[in-house]
Image (cartoon, rainbow, N blue to C red; front, side):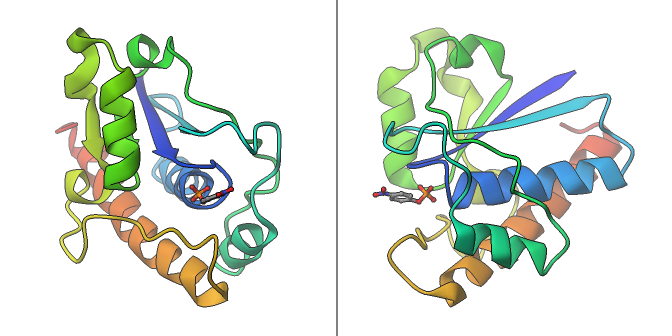
Length: 157
Ligand code: 4NP
């Protein structure tokens, strides 16, 4: 079992979107038994909340249901529990690297470059913008998830 943690700031916009999309594609590929996906935020403000309604609505139009997810904050134990910890932007990457014990730092990567998406390095934070920002998140996250699932299928990850 490969365990993957997707991380943003609030765990209500970007990482739950990535969580729902990656989970959906893993299920479609028949890999549910071999890959576990979770998401969390570096911040604690939204712990226990469902994803932002704009994220839920945007994902629904593409066939992903985020409504059952609940925000959680990254825990110290996550650095040993997960095999791969992927940050949505540099700021969250830096925060994870500060908190992570030395022996687990190699598990931490930036989500888009690690997933072979070369258009941009960061998933832009859509929280203070409009619906278009959430569509952009989905465009990037779907590409990244396709690439990750291809690597799981080929057993190169
Ligand atoms: P996320 O977006 O990190 O993609 O979940 C944000 C959610 C909440 C806040 C900022 C970004 N906030 O400042 O509360």
